Image 1: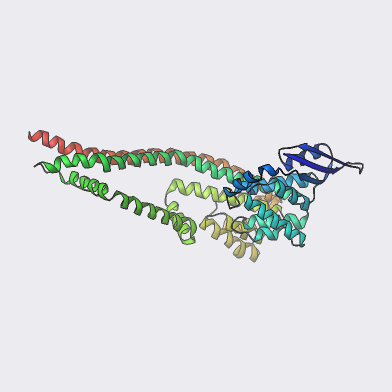
Image 2: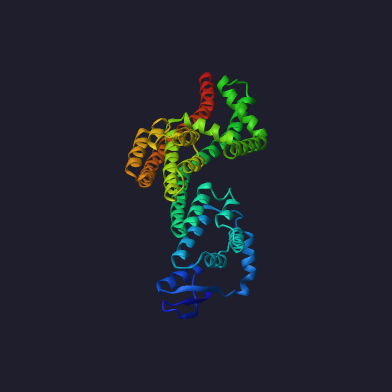
Amino acid sequence: MKFHYIAAKPDGTVTEDTAEFESAAKVIEFLAAKGLHPISIRQFRDETSLASKILRSQFSFGRITTSDKIFICRYLSLMLRAGTDLFQAIDILIIDIRKPALKSFLIEVRTALEKGQPFYTVFARYPRHFSSVFINLVKSGELSGNLEHMFNDLSISLGKEQELRNKIRSAMFYPAILLSLSLFIVLFLVTFALPRIANVFSTGNYTPPAFSRVIFGIAFFLDEYLLIVVGVLLISILGALFFFMRTRIGRNVLYWIADHIPVIRSVLHKIAIQRFAGTLSSLLRAGLPIVDALDITSITVGHPGIRQALQHIAHEGVAKGLTLGDAFRKETAFPPVVSNLIAISEKAGHLEEILHTLSEFYESEIDFSIKTLLTLIEPVLLIGIGLIVMMIALSIVVPIYQLVSQI
């Protein structure tokens, strides 16, 4: 892409040029390396490609993803570090971004800045996309004049959050494929092979054992009503997913179930503590009061037990005069090592650093726990599918053996 830039030299003179760059951010990097302060950056529009741009925009996602937020934070931090003011940085991002939803959001940000509104207020209008932690960190950075470092910290924390999600998804990918293929094989046996074998016995004078008749009956039923059964299962699964993922009651029920499965309970607990430590460290470093920081952190941890413990610490402990360490020691939701570290670091005056270190420690613990969970899930799935196949095989083999024995 071709960009025209105007920049100021250290001696105050102005220079301008037109050159090819991958993006507006690359122009900023180039000018920063040369010791130039950007005044204006303008991309030359290629009118011949307008139709293709419109076509691409029709297939763009209509929501702001974690990757989009990382992109915004990383590039705003880079531009502010290069000496660009916030208004110019937003203008450059609007030029550089292709995604319609993100471009619309940035235009709204620019309009708010033109009206003299605080920067963070636009993020606060989209609570579905930007968490209370994100909004409060941006607010603190804006009030303290430290947006550059705040956006850099946000890009790092969002990157770690996305990396954790990707690790969990990749860990569950193989079991999901194994389960899907196994169910397909079982469904094929029950709906295609088994009814044909069962017909052999039903047309003769031999009566199979009760166990085989039950399996054959299930096979005949699925063979005749397969579409109805699959439709009901899909609707039930989608309904269950919506209930468990989109409603507070559903999430609480899901956590209650997970809390009674030891290995899963351990993973969820460690993820919640890692989120707690990382979030509280960022909020305290941004200068938020401890009670407000604990309240905001409790919203983000995603674990009902730890959420309630943090709210109790904030309002029944710290707000009533207890030290943070004493308030944490009264809560059983946190391991003793976490409570003791918080108490010691509070006295030493470096609570934020210890919380950050604790967050990194639990990241490695989560990796190990996910691998352990995966090594348990795979054999359980194999054993479960093996038992189903064995039942189908026995329902066929046993009557055949009895029939041969009678002959």
